[in-house]
Amino acid sequence: MGAVQPPIIVLTGPTGVGKSALALAAAPLINAEIVSADSRQVYRYLDVGTAKPTVAERAAVPHHMIDVVYPDQPFSIVDFRRGAEAALADVADRGHAAIVVGGSPHYLSALMDGLEPPEVSLPLRRWLERFDREQPSRLDEWLRVLDPISAGRIEPRNRRRVTRAVEATLASGEPFYKVRRRTLPAGAARWVGLRLERAVLHERVDRRIREMIDAGWLAEVRMLLRMGYSPDLPAMSATGYRELAQVVLGETSLQAAVERIRFATHAFIRRQESWLRQDQRIQWLNGAVPDLRKELVSQATSERPAPA
Image (cartoon, rainbow, N blue to C red; front, side, top):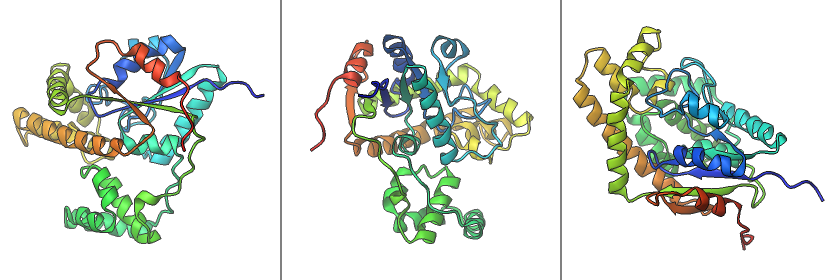
């Protein structure tokens, strides 16, 4: 009989629900390290606006897949999957449990389901990128017709991913959401989700946006622009960065930018919730409960019946 593998816990839920804080509090109870599945925390210098764990928090509990690349370096979902798989193997080799934390459904799926993206068609991609610049929003219409499931999952502001989805669908003749994947054995990971009433969650994220502004988010964006990072970079498509770049460049007011950030965050939460509700692996917990550490550990380590 082989050695028992340390547990892998996937902790997910919409933006602002409290995933990172719960993972940080629960990790010491099960001798766990944290693997981030956040699509923007991989970038250096994007700290305040991505709610990146502090240096002190990362010293208290080892974190992986944070500050992996610079904002102007290419970083694909395959790059993330490979890096995160290596991190999980490294954590397991030390005999530690792993808590995979993230609300980016495509990053979680890439890692836990081993997505194998379709082949790249560079000529088609270049044409689509040019088309998207010349006729904004038309690719969104195409994607809704060609692959409505992916259209509902992909954030429209992420132009790189919208373009990739249309490219893959046109090149392969199959919807992008049907990308090849290998599913891990049942029980290889325990999925736990946090949820809150929509109104409560919106109030929480609105408060967090104000706190991020007070904590220096605008100054962070100003620094990124002075370092030469363009607002058009994929890294800067993280909610809030382009809006605040417009403030720095004198193109809009801070109040107007904050309102757009609120609207974009609320819309992103709706898409996250819609996607995550479809995943039958997730055991949901009420994020309003004061101390969920023991409940998370119990849900994550209890025996569960094999699927029918």
